[in-house]
Image (tube, rainbow, N blue to C red):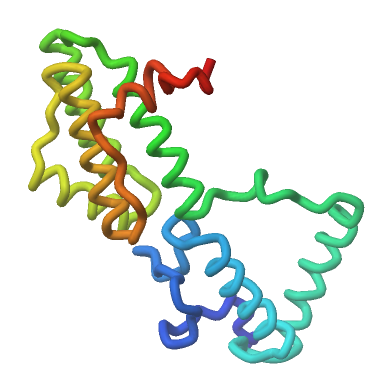
Length: 195
C-alpha cells in the first residue's frame, strides 16, 4: 500500500489563535489575518519538515524537497512583497469598504426604481459571494436586521456608514461620524487635504 502523501489536515486544537477554518475544512486565508495565517503556514511547514502529520517522513521530505527546489530555482532572486500576496481578512475588508463607500458616493441623489432594485440585488449577491464566509454571514444577518436603505445617495451612504460602524464596534475599532460620510467618501475634507 502506498504512503499517504496528501497534506495533513490540521486539527482545530493545532491551529494558532485567530485562524478561521473555511467551509471546506481548511484554513481560510480571506477570513484570517496575514499574521495568523503566516503563523499557521510556518507551523505546517515545520511539521512537514519534521515528518509529523504525514504518512511517512520520506513522503514529507519528498514533498518538501520538491516544493523547495521549485521555489529556490524560480524565486531565489526576487522576494515577493506583501502587495502581491492573496488578500487576508484585513486587506480584503479595507478594500471592500473602499469599494462600497465609493459606490455610495456615486449613487444617484434620486435613483430610479431600477437603480434602487439593482443596488439591493447587488448588495444581496455581494453578501453571499464575499470571500470571508464568517464576514459574509455576519453581513447577511445585519442586512436582515437593518433593512438596506436605497431611496437616495444620502440614505444609502448613511446606512452603509452605520453598517461599517457596526463591524468596527465588533472589532473594537473606533466608529465614524456618519454625518460626515459624504465629505469622507465623495467631496473630500473641507480642509482641502484631498485636493
